[in-house]
Image (tube, rainbow, N blue to C red):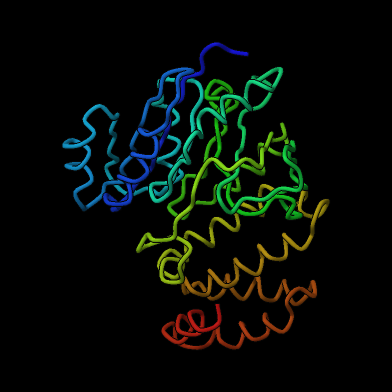
Length: 301
């Protein structure tokens, strides 16, 4: 067993100073004696009192503020690059580590013979589920729902940077894009042990209807990025996932008022017998005013 394992814990944040305190305190309350802990806050140019709060109550924390809100992926990538230690844990600003989380992670990581074989290791969040206590997940596992819910990643910084692996640089997230790439090429060692509690008390979330409408253009581009990178793997392991991406692209392009692009995917869906009825319905409403399209999305999503 390694005698020491130091952790950098990266928390991207945007306009959530009150929730951020909870996340930070959950780290400070860890009783971890097997190495050092560094906390890095990557602020996506918050307009609230985040900076003042950090300077007043947590002056020892490394605080980096982006010039603009570039989304969670950019913030996480920046945190990785600026971490002092090789083992980097990603924590959302509205969640918290459970008591003893770092000790649990330390013990499990040290059960792996060659830690440099994998670029990332995953531990369950409070809603995370896998079929066994421990699995090395591959691409097929991700697209066939062997893994469900959320998991907390522990990155091997040296390997992540050397292999040029990173989160998508988009304001709408898409972190599974990174998991797909890593799972296909390396596999992802994953434990069912819960190390993070999820909360849903954030007033603004990327998964809410209003956010998806606001950033529909970015969501549509992200769907196309998935299809460009993984189409052949989708065809091999689960064609339904590719069909879902096409359908999602058609909806997001419609919400973004890019109607020709939306209809292209709708017609392709019909041709390939994918969501035929819904695609016909979308073609019809694609001639409606945008205001009505958005209202229907809020109603039926």
